[in-house]
Image (cartoon, rainbow, N blue to C red; front, side, top):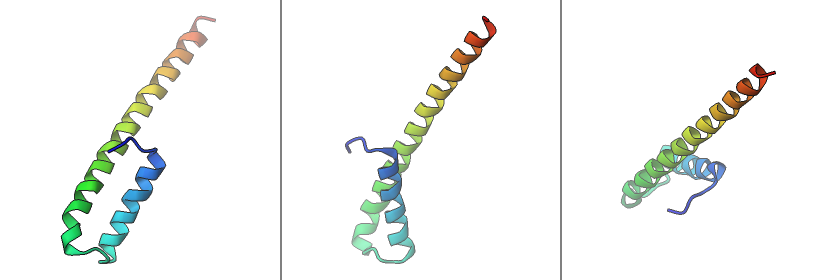
Amino acid sequence: MTENKYSKSIAKLEEIINRIDNQKIDVDELSSQVKEAAALIKECKSKIDKAELEVKKVVENFKEEDSSK
């Protein structure tokens, strides 16, 4: 799977969930759609974790700069 933007991944995940909830998915497609949803969840979690680390680094750098004044 190519790396998608977070918002596109979430939109696709919501689409899959809605199709399953509304029973608008063929039983033959169900397995592949669940696998795709799991991959999207994993990808989104990875992006959230990466963003969290980046934010923590920025905050730490800000605190270090502020304390050196």
